[in-house]
Length: 183
Figure 1 (cartoon, rainbow, N blue to C red):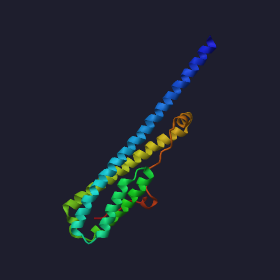
Figure 2: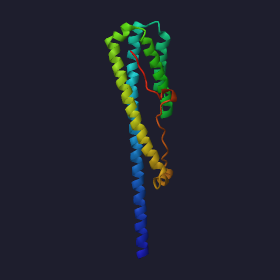
Figure 3: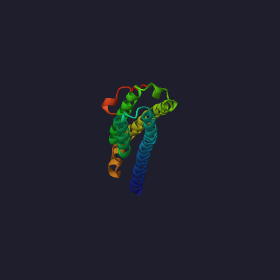
Figure 4: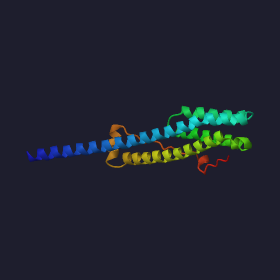
């Protein structure tokens, strides 16, 4: 009778540990999903500013059509991709296009003095800071989650229950330096 009781207690403890580990993995996976949603919100905010910025520049530099179209195409491309890797590459293209737009704006002193342009510049700067913070938060959540699914005993539960490694939201090598925006 005692050996049967010991076996039942051990099985109950094992099941309890497995449930606790599983719940911890679910919590970490949900944190990653939440962090990704925050990046998505910030990127959407940035994407919403771009048409206004392009229209403001267009009023002063309408003959810079190629640059303006490049920004709008990069924005459209960035809005269509989904995963962190593809999204990071698309956002890099968009950042480069915005840099080209700001380079064009430097040639137009009246544009730089425009209050609407200055307000959009400030909003874009704020958005970039929020994106950077959200990206850091997301990558921290991914690190915690990936570490959890690769350590014992969680890796055994993760393998059986279908938890897979998540991808970091990494900036392309060309963007690793500080962004310089001049108005």
